[in-house]
Structures are given as C-alpha cells and as structure tokens.
Image 1 (cartoon, rainbow, N blue to C red):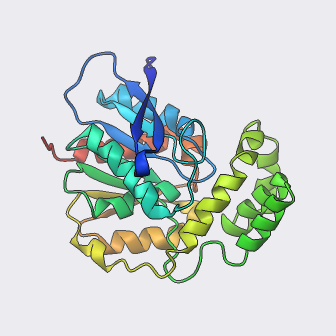
Image 2 (cartoon, rainbow, N blue to C red; image 1 turned 135 degrees about the horizontal axis):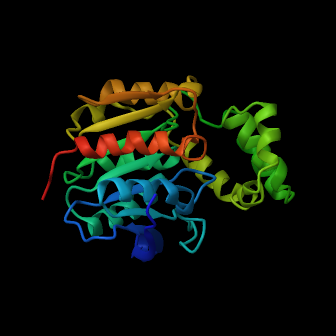
Length: 281
C-alpha cells in the first residue's frame, strides 16, 4: 500500500474544548469530500490509521480520525459530560470538513454518529459499525459498579477485564489472548475513560429509534458475524431495520474489532459505502 502522510489537526468542540485529530492525505489533491472515522471505547484515533490509509489510497479522499475526549491530547470529559457533548464535538469537526462528508462510526463512536445524523442534512453517507445501543437494558448490566470499584482501587487490570468479560461479552480464552498483546498495556490506560463512556451510554437506556425513520442519508450498518448478540448485533439489526433504505452488511468470521482482525475486509466495506454515496456540494 502506498505511503500516505498522516497530519495532525484540531477543532474546538463543546464549550471550546480542544479535540485533536489525525488525517491521512492523498498524494494528489482531490476535490472529493473527506471521510471521518469516529472510534469507540478502548480506542483512539490512531487505532484506525491503517484503515484510514487504505481508504485514502483507494478513494483519493482525506480521512480524519479524531481522538475523542479523555484520551491522547484531546480535552478531558468535563463536569457536564454526556453523549451529547460528544455529538457537539463531532459536529464541530463536520462543520470543518463540509458538505458530503462520509461519516463512519465504530462502537461508541457509532452511537455518537447516529445521534449526530439527525442534526445534519449535509452528510454524504453514514456507516455504523456495531453501535452498542441500550435499547431495552443498560449496556453494562450490573458491571458498572464493579468497574468503578476496581478503578477506585487503582486496579486497572480488573477494571479492563470486567469490561471485556461482562460488558463486551468476550470469553476467558479471548481475554487471555488479549493479555498477551503489546496493546494490553495501552488499553489499561483507557479503562477509566471507558468507564465514563459506558456510564454515559447506560443513560440512553430505552432510546427510541422512531426518529431515525426520518433519516434520508444513505446508511450502511455493519455487524460482525461473531457479534450476533447484545450489546452489538441486536442493536445493529434494529437500527438497520428503522432507517429507510439502510443496508445491513454482515462481516463473516469476525466480530467487533475488524480493524485489527480483518483490516482489509473492513476497509473494503467502508470503500463500498463511500463509492455508493451521492455527490453533495
């Protein structure tokens, strides 16, 4: 894959807070609308740089991957934090990228992207990869107090393990594999941020999807075949059934983190959605 140059930038989000982003830029200037990839919990924008580079190489578009609040050099959450703060941050970035922007959201980032979509009439396309919406029950179940208790003890390992086992639904075998990866130590540093985000997500419990029946933006909802359960598969199918014309795409053999397990395949799905998007100016 040809080398693309990642740049760094920033916008002012909710209450003027700084939101940093990484950007892949094509070798030749392009008039195509850019792409924004909004990451999920336990991730940063950097975790999507490989995907961003693949999209830039194949489509000639700029791709922006922001670091959401509570990580990297972006602002902290702040005392009034909730999911709508993230929506305001995202809309500030979309105001900069302009009409026709392709918005891709993963996990918590997909929830934020879905919420933001009702406030925008200028998106070129919307791609939602497994939004963990708490439609009829909290995403964390009874795990949130255990995560907080572990964080209060400064036991990041237990907090992160609880997130994987009791919220994300990973098996003990998968958790053992994750612990062997170099990225485990980086994920430990995101445990506290993830707890804040999970609590904000639980506040959406009972979210009414009816307003999304009015969306007109071309929408693709992606579900990994291994995520055929709450908190990922069930909400993904529910969202796809409500948005008019939305396409539900199932990624065989993979689950919630295809940017790591199947980078070429997930990029293929994103590029297909981008290529099908109408041109907005």
